[in-house]
Length: 508
Image (tube, rainbow, N blue to C red):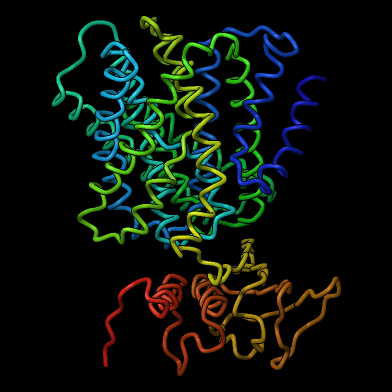
């Protein structure tokens, strides 16, 4: 009964989150605190169980984030995100640990643990906020990739600092981090590509099996990476990233299923973490948390961003936004349970400091991020929305049935069916408009909100989808005079070049 009520209240709380700009994690944590010892009175102190459930939830959240990340947005951001996730993390750990030791009076080992724990940006918080902030694709790509990548090195550091005995030398730590990242990346890429190939070439008997298979592949990637003594978190994110960009059958249904699982994982993890907190014990840790958080937010994060992005000639406005958008969330709180399970001295204090820091600075950063984006003139409201295309294989007929949604903002609005110029072997067979369906003619004009049914033979399936997305991005003139249709990223780059957001060479 209590679980179902918590779930219903949590779903309703998403409405508050979307309107206020607050990451939903704060509301869920508050619900956990309200149910706990200082609220309704439910007693929960099982740190080990919390860590296990937290890890499982993080796997689902990273998988959902990877499935929803567009490759053409994240590809240009990979170098910057990789540097931020490694070199940037090292800077943030060092500066934050020094602040915890010298300003908050924390012993060096505990200070290093705090620095490592809070240096990871939270995938759930970042994905939640970015859904409501219309940022340019390259900034969204950097933030999403960073939040997906930086969990791996941070987990390694927290485990190393929490282990009994002396901490390994820095060069041994670097080697261990590099090895685990390589193993995790290899596992994720291999399993992701193998899974995508299998799902594209094997027609499952029911559409509902595709979402289950996709999530199972993602979890398999985590397990394979972890069993090979690599980074399971990096493996699951990369595998999900490949699956999410592989044009799999029944993709909208798969995406919706993964998003639902992601919400359940967030709700369960955050409520459980809220239950683990005892508010009346936080009093003595509030001031140290505020001091450490202030240094992290105003010094460590900006310094790591400015130094990490220096080789990429990133404009100062983008550096400022990246500095402010380093949101913390459940990941640091989950990682703060590692020293508690390991029996590190003052580990409860570490957990309390991290909890207060995350709550206070997420309250500050989350709602102000859209305002800062507008002030820095980094909004991207004019970005055309991508088409929603679902593919169902017709195995015996050697073809595919594509269901195409034309969203608001798509440049397919106003285009005639004949102007789509689909490859030979593909045709628009049905249009659903305002609840009524009809067979279109060559001069039928497409509108926002239309649902199209497109039949394509196996050889032209991919070319058909590329052409549809190109028209959705560039309108009827995409690929004019018989030139090959552009991929979506090309049309996006051209619009951004016109707005002065990227440099583009003109070739005569």
